[in-house]
Amino acid sequence: MSGTLRARRRRRSRRGGLQLERSGPWIGVVGLLVLLWLAFSTMVYAPWWGVVLHVLVLVPVAVWTTRWARSRPAASTFVPLAGLPALAIVTALGVGLGGWSA
Image 1 (cartoon, rainbow, N blue to C red):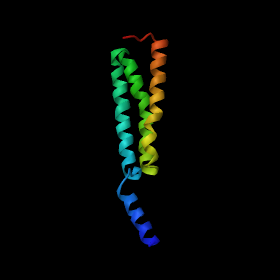
Image 2: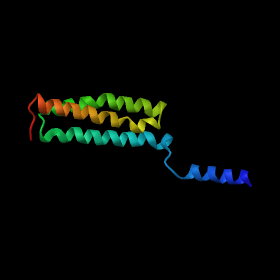
Image 3: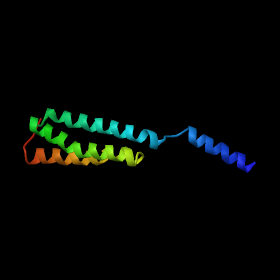
Image 4: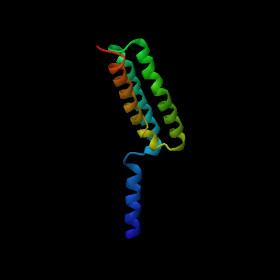
């Protein structure tokens, strides 16, 4: 009986839940798209070169995500979270030192 119960639990856990080995890279790509949207939304207060700078900051994050999508698919979900502070730093430096304002 206990063997059958364990088999049922294993089947349930395989069917339901989030399978980051399969969906992790796609979640990471969606995170990159959100970061790209944030970078383009700086057009409201940043000059054109500030927007380009924001996008250039995202290039290493995109490369990192694609590399981890192949080697560590579950961990690639969280890579775009590293790009968020990078964008915030560029924005803070631009507003503080560059005089960007809305």
